[in-house]
Length: 131
Image 1 (tube, helix red, strand yellow):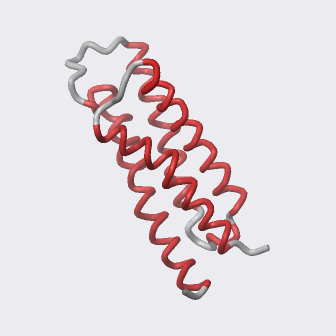
Image 2 (image 1 turned 120 degrees about the vertical axis):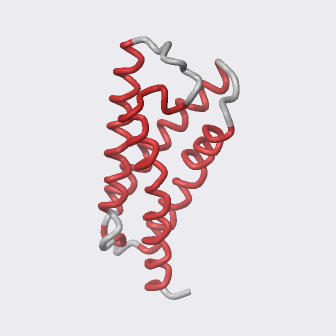
């Protein structure tokens, strides 16, 4: 595979994967903890505020990854920083699994994206980056 083909595939992959934080964060910002279902309106005001705040940060991460798509081979530092944010979030989610138990399937899938897929995509970006 040529470097140009790899670059195009990486750009497409990042664009598709960015839909996850964009969709989840917008849902969280609009609906608060209710976005996860089952909260039944019982979430405290502080939990709702914190949930929406974190959703806003998550939106920023998604936008950040989208901003890497043009000239992705030149955005290594930004890409690695965003990847670090995602991995740190994944480690926090893993701590929750260890302390509280396994969440629902979508959240376990998120854990896989955070701790496996995103670092692998970052390695891909590094491989095509300009020295």
